[in-house]
Image 1 (cartoon, rainbow, N blue to C red):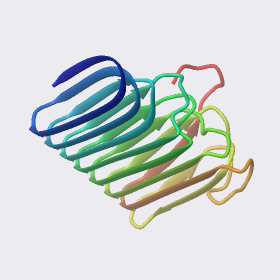
Image 2: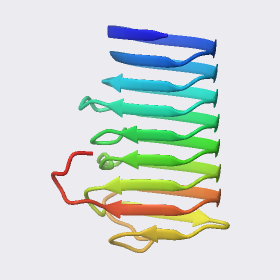
Image 3: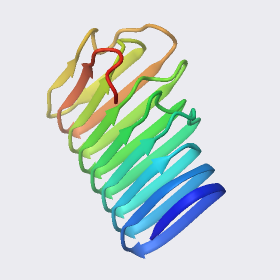
Image 4: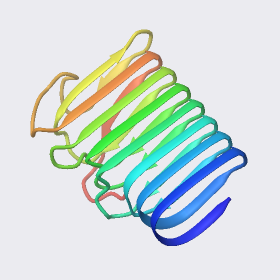
Length: 173
């Protein structure tokens, strides 16, 4: 499935096959049983779910208010600056990679059973809670439970490393 353009709302459902979306919309809802999802666009409210498939999400400058991405067996990669006001990311078996600055008063929650979590950001701000049962936890610029700026970040991994890296401001995400 290949969709391009500007829409008020997009809803896509597939049993099998890749989805490529290059579009701007107020709301996007994608669900697939098997297939990769690639999204580029400006979206205010985003919900993406795949049972088996990788999610690659590149959001343009429009401030995304809410984003939920979930996969049972697949990796999730998300880039935007700033990140959505509220972002929930979940995978059972797969890596999670997020690049971008946390929105003012934003919340970022990432959970994985088996897979690493990596976040590259330009500033050290917000409260970060990071836990891994059988992996390492590394947070550049502050302790994993530090508080600042009214922002909240929570990372949980049962079996995987967690890494938060600070990048030079001005570097493109």
